[in-house]
Length: 495
Image 1: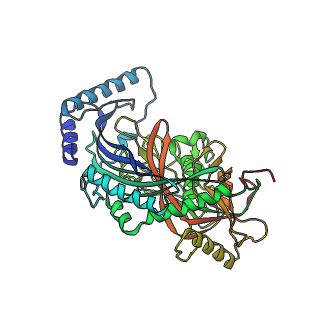
Image 2: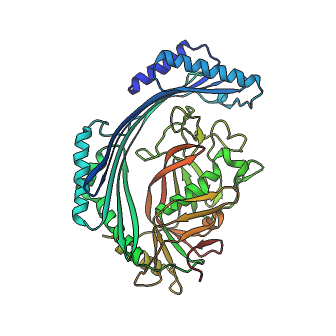
């Protein structure tokens, strides 16, 4: 179904509905993808999924949910009836009730499609030719490295309606090009992954013209080779510079989840189930913001409950101001409703989630444009030295890349992994093997002194929560400067 057909189906379902109150979610999603390894296609795929999910409510606020993988008027009627019957059954057995959705404002809006090119601008065969050409160009520049190239493009159409007359519709288009390289040196193997995202096949045309991702992949592969030869760093506490991918991981995993409204009873940023508004969590000038950016990997203009997705100033001048509240849990958590409910698909009930979360520092130190990664790191060293921010005795470490990690929301402890490290204190810029970056959420935020370079908010990933996976993104300045802190550590050999 196209967008107009989804809207017509929602309107028809509510025109005939005799149910008390329902949220109807229609989704039609298709995806093309491919993967190449060392000059050959490993996989070419196409997929399509669509369906309807209905969340029904009694006047007391008991709810029921049902879904089906068919988009039709008759199936829609059946799903609405099943959801209503479940809501009534839950009311009879004393299930927890929540009437907040009945107070939600009525909205009728259709978001503009951010794409320039339609999904089928190129055929799947034409896409294979284009992606193969980019892959082969990379192989020719360094055939000694094992290269894999992947491409995905997604068209995700949504229409959400409520019994109060609300109807919102939007399309979430995504395109992603990835190069992964594996190097072997000194009897070690190290891999690197770089990505370029957008809303349509335009990213392939850009890459053909500027080879941005290709150059980045080659530079990161050289860094990976140096990591294979590098020694391990003694464990301890160091002054740090982290890149924006790691900063996104810190903001997302260590802070963003801690301010989602359904986590307040088990969050280090909650007290008696309420968000600790007014808590000083970082220095003045540090801001944390979450909200949708048009054309971003995690773009979503409306919640899956039919509310507008707000941009939220979570931290302002180092003070915790707000959280990410969905319609059902925000009031209990002491937050405003910000339209934060996201669902993996029509077959799931929405949960409060981030979209694009970015960590910004008012004190931003410019970095001159550099022709290569090595030169950029040298520029970072020179700028820090000029500003009196570089520790030249001992070690001052720059961490590159984000390999994932985990956080305990109750205690605020985090553990992350990077690709490797460079000692800025030494003018030769020696490389070290990756170490575990760990510590306390609030200590890491308090340690942030400045941002380096312009804002970079395209660090992407997939966020898992309660069995649902949704796209996530964010970032910071190109780099963040963190002073040494006893509650923030790098692992490795014992010093």
